[in-house]
Amino acid sequence: MDKTVFGLNGKTLALWLLRLSVAFVFLYAALLKVRGNERMIEEFELLGLGQWFRYAVALIEALGSILLLMPILSWLGVIILIFVDAGALVAQLMVLHNNVVHIFIIAAFLVAVSYLQRASREGGRLPS
Image 1 (cartoon, rainbow, N blue to C red):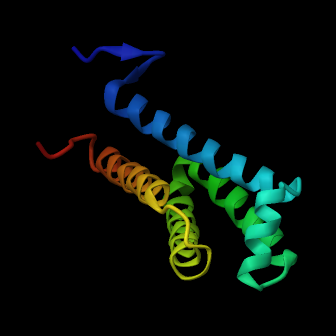
Image 2 (cartoon, one colour; image 1 turned 135 degrees about the horizontal axis):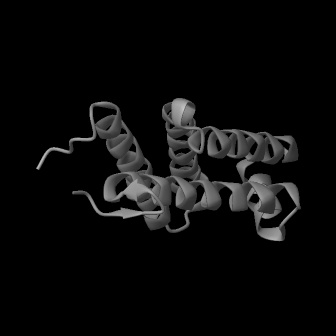
């Protein structure tokens, strides 16, 4: 018999915890952009694309986060957020020259969400 927490087995619970964690990170980043956080304004100014791009990225981050929390569209949320993450990596490496470790950690979480979701669609069996 599978042990459950809140009626969810361990794999399903892990998937939801990852989804919620990643969605929170991207929603928080979107909120910082929309509210005009000084650092966000400076970074987008350095990119040279204008402040409209800050709002566009915030909208895309929010959309990806919302989709990530909808099981049937979670795969689309992962794809959108992977592209956002890749864009952040390019911006950090080419223009901003800041630390990129957090970008790889977020990407790893997105890959884990994708992996666990795929496994759950295929009958809940994860390869050992």
